[in-house]
Length: 137
Image (tube, rainbow, N blue to C red; front, side, top):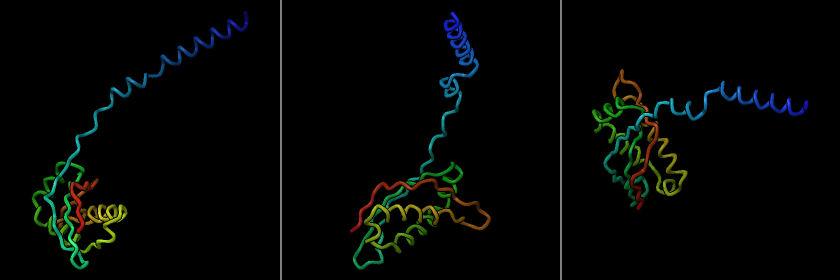
């Protein structure tokens, strides 16, 4: 009899505790959806590398923090492309042939574009660089 009473009390307590906490499904439903991603595709680049007779053909799309950054990059597009052309032309073909080299280039692109385009302007926040084309000849 004592065991039955203890089991009923435990079951009742467990039921009461579960009613006190909001369900995880309801909590998840209340979360706002994540913001839509902001992408900025750039025309492909064809660049002579520092190595003799080596050419890089690369297409990239930038994932940005917000629309303001996209607008700013679009306003200064010639300067953005110039910075990237100079960066690409300094690359080594043997390094770019590896996955690690491609990832280092992604990091270098982020760093190159983070610098303000003009004095008094905030840094550009590039959250990711996506390759859309990559040919090394």
